[in-house]
Figure 1 (cartoon, rainbow over the protein chains, first blue to last red):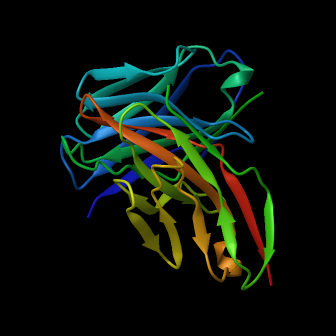
Figure 2 (figure 1 turned 90 degrees about the vertical axis):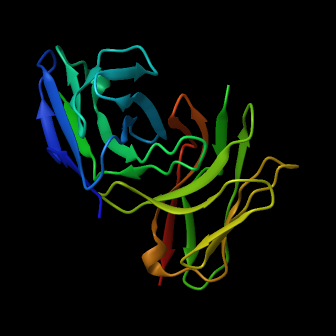
Length: 115
Length: 114
């Protein structure tokens, strides 16, 4: 069966420090991968998605970037964190069934506090 | 653009009460519709889905019907339990360039009291 792992579970970082959040998927190949952010009291906002290695689409211009160095690895990064980057970050994967229903499965999330 | 609007919370009910959480959507094209649930400290889990008009998704006693005429996908459960306490998200999805792009509502926090 497929599993998705995100780490760390919680992170406290000072303003201006770098960020690297990692997400890996097991038990499938060539998945679509997604990064979402859930700010306090708000819904989920899609940040990036990837349909293949090295292919990254950005939904919202901001202080973050994403990379996919391997088929089942998706990394969210920042060179300098802002206070507004605080939130709950969720990684998700989907099978990428062209023309069919493509359900997303979510990781447990990383709670990031920028102080 | 696409958007999802769902009933604002928080919603507090007693055990065995009837639950409705309203959700409406706007979309270009014909989206799939989803309800996800988020238990405290966890990620999102798919609760149910519907892919076309008049489809009814159901799971764990929850139901939602895809109503194209009212662009709605309201979540219902006849008798809630304390274990249903969670945040519920409605979402619409369109398959674009090989990826399912989901648009979420703001979430509705549900608390069930014994």
